[in-house]
Image (cartoon, rainbow, N blue to C red):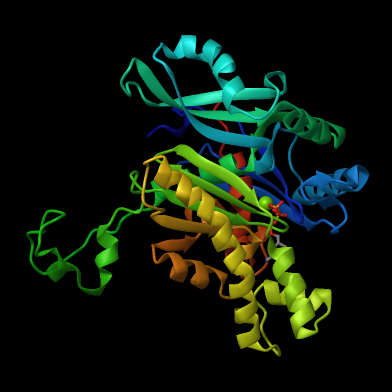
Length: 389
Ligand SMILES: Nc1ncnc2c1ncn2[C@@H]1O[C@H](COP(=O)(O)OP(=O)(O)OP(=O)(O)O)[C@@H](O)[C@H]1O
Ligand SMILES: [Mg+2]
């Protein structure tokens, strides 16, 4: 193919301003496989952002600037995100009408469903079922708080950059997951017998042996996937099916809660407890660490319950079909195993860097694999290009 005929896509610089870590990255999406061309991340001191609120704006701006300078980003527009609590998603039923008419009517409808003043929110929706009887249709409504979105745009602007997209972190995470699941190549099963069975054929197990899972497409669009982003201070639960969010919520449990317990119960300094949270278990009582992770992790398990009951009472599903763990919490020793075990469903740790190319100089040796699950929001943001130029 002639590369010069390809439309060049407009790049966006992704700025993921987490409560613990700021990540800045840029993807070159003009190639078939996107390439990370710029990257840097910087820790924020604990007092800078508390419970999702920016407490020390000047400091946050300074660290955004330091991070951008270290990444040496070009002068391009920025995509950033606000935390999950800026948004609610809700399934609603309303009179059947064209999508165009629904864009207007949705504001009247939303008043009954959203606990915010209608003037303070911005709305979007997706039609789930065009006909649910009685001349009604079913929609998934997404309402986001304007002040949080405008506040984030102002922060980026005050740091000296041009905000073009302000997303919601959980939606950026979803965007990354959708990219990854579409990219995952399912290896064909090569058997001695040249005639491969059709999926569903009873004899299929004979061809597959121990690798039976490879027959299942990774991106099963009928699956309810729980994207769990265990960040510094919060866990965002975002449940999606076939590109549609069904549930989104922040739980007040993040890496910091695990770290505090390591510190208390193992008698460690904050720094050492943080290293334990990052998977460094040398010289500590591993069994006690795993016990703590299970106990604090059970709060995430309990916090997920309302979302599962919601899916059940809404008649959507008996439960979730897959867990995808991301954020710094993916490194908590035993957390992934605990969640996979209690739910007993296919589970994975998000690894977006496996589906992208990058300049190896951007990461220290072995660092890319470690950082990969922390970069889902940033990558989901950087993939929000779209406008051709
Ligand atoms: N390689 C790493 N670098 C930095 N932090 C890490 C690393 N591995 C684990 N962590 C831990 O993960 C947490 C940061 O995770 P993450 O970047 O997902 O949070 P965040 O995006 O800042 O927070 P939130 O999404 O809740 O606002 C920190 O508490 C940190 O101790
Ligand atoms: Mg985060």
